Image (cartoon, rainbow over all chains, first blue to last red):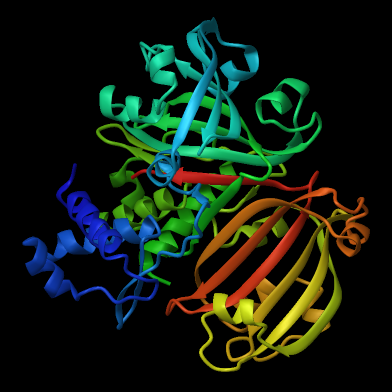
Length: 234
Length: 234
């Protein structure tokens, strides 16, 4: 991790721990330099990272302020770590319906930009939030990137496994959202009626070399789907 | 506009005009320096802006690549200019149902962080995309920030009016999404049935000094609501 990412994480932890409100003014550059014992450029870069990630905003000639404006129960979609942030706030669990190795279906091969026949892990899970069914997820992972997966891992946080155990660096993601209807099987899993509305999110996750390695199609329970997006115009 | 923002815009235009595909490699730093006749630091900062905005990604030791991955008809929510980007792609129009000056209702006063009684413009519009009803929007603007609005302006792009005519610099936004149901009036406007599902987006827009000045509650036609979010982990 770069020095300025380290400092950005420390400032972020400080904001979280002190539970600082939106609009709270942070210490000056000089004060931050001495608190974290680093040079001015490191502080400037750390603040840029925090601004890009929606944690703070900088007002020219005035200072740096806490941006955080969240609603309880709304999950941040802008952050690649969105799924992990669910885990921090709530008691999540997963039931693995199916886990198998497959050859890429043609639509998934296209999305993951596969040129050869490649083997994928296919996982179907129902995820629960505080024991309430939250979503039905179908997810595909390139086996060349994720060489091993089992039901035990998939019943917990696959993303923690990817980042902490496999040391995979997820660089960015694309999410596509629309409203659709549940089929009969999905409705049973979510304890709803067939044809009930659902928020559908298709997501593609990319490695740091720009290669897409994971595609998911997630259907959310319409009462549990609450998402938060931060827009920037810096 | 900063020099590096100018260069970022030029590189972005180049990508759009050439219709460069995802994964297309951009020229090297040295080549970009000579093309745009600026120094290395300006190019580095321009590329950072483009990376933050999801236009490109940089691979250490390899180069800079076009990130763009869009689906026709999906609107980018990450970009503050999301609404304008709809205007670029589609033929949008608006029917103004109501436009009046009001005292802030208590829920809106809280969201816009008002300490005194302040006058707001309240606007209710139905928006059409290629003549199909797309959403019903209720929007509140601080009159101290937006001193004048009329039905003619509101029947076109309010955002173009704010940025081009009033020179308002929109710095960032927060969007909250969930699924809800249409009431009878909304269903009539959207040519749907009462209680049909709707994607509801509440949005708050902020000035460059961090002050929230606009709050909107938008209910989308469930077949027209298609959104795109880019996540970053830089």
